[in-house]
Length: 114
Length: 118
Image (cartoon, rainbow over all chains, first blue to last red; front, top):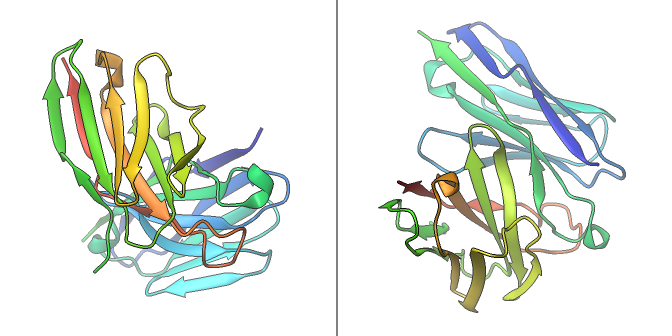
């Protein structure tokens, strides 16, 4: 069964204190790994897609990396506005790889204190 | 600024009442998803459509939930009768639905409908 596990569940950082969030997955034939950001009272907002091991994507203070079994979201010198829940997801392996649903992890709630 | 629009944003109802949630996908997107989010279960797929045809509704309780796309600009999710355990945030998402094409299978989410069934 396809699974996505995120750790830690919650992370508290001081402003400027860099850290990483983990997303591990068990799925055969990975067809992309997605990172989303979700603010309270809002829907998930797309951040990155990674497709192959070794791939990296960056956006401001965020960098996502991918290996064959997991992905990391590195946060460098975070600011309070980076506080949010970060979700990772993989496409369910159905319909021959066409756009089926995403299987989401339960997220990491990040709090950055000034 | 293209976005997925969901209405209503909040709904409070009593057990046994019918609830209808609506979604306007991004213009040009051919795939629409309905997800439910709770603290315990996280985001779970309820159903999804491609070109208005249902492809998968295995996550939806069939006896009380129904999802339709009357036209390309409107998707609906109905609960009848509603129960307290249906209380959650319901999200609609849309995408281009190309087969595995890199960059084409991103899903864009609406702001959600927060449902409370008393």
